[in-house]
Image (cartoon, rainbow, N blue to C red):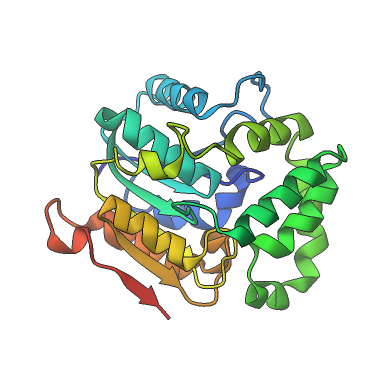
Length: 264
């Protein structure tokens, strides 16, 4: 089987995949990496555009000597970059998994994103972390893990650089609808098999927009019960089972595409 490359959300680091790396790598090579602007990267963040992320991914594949075509699995920000890579470098990609990626933004998600950008104007990453945490994690997960909230916020601040996160937000989070990197445009160019996963309680990439992206891709989708935006963390077993099931399907299997399901 081909390698699997994981790309996380904006304020996530390699450590964010800690609960998934060991089980996912039981049967194949798995690579998780921090994109330009994520974590404590020392890469120049003057240009953090979607095009730059595609170039960085190509450089990563070449530097590591990864066997292609490979499978690419992206969450949120990483999912949007996955769309861009699959659309512009189809020679490198076998299949893609997109988690918590919407075809377009709803009024609610636009307001949430506007709030995050306003937080960044304070120059304080902790403010962003405190505001975004209850908007990205589902209510059920927060109720169960309320005692971990302060540690989550501290970890986000410690493992990221403000300049990098600001660059990612400003250059990739809000794109004009006529941008060639907008998901509505990228989805029409993707030809590889795709799986789209979302959370039932996600207010940023709500279930209707998950279904819309899957429809645009001609792809299979699954909506995970009670989960918010961060489905690989909130519903780790269900998320991993869906990913592994999809990636293990033989090429050409009719279940590989256009087989929607709400896991409620």
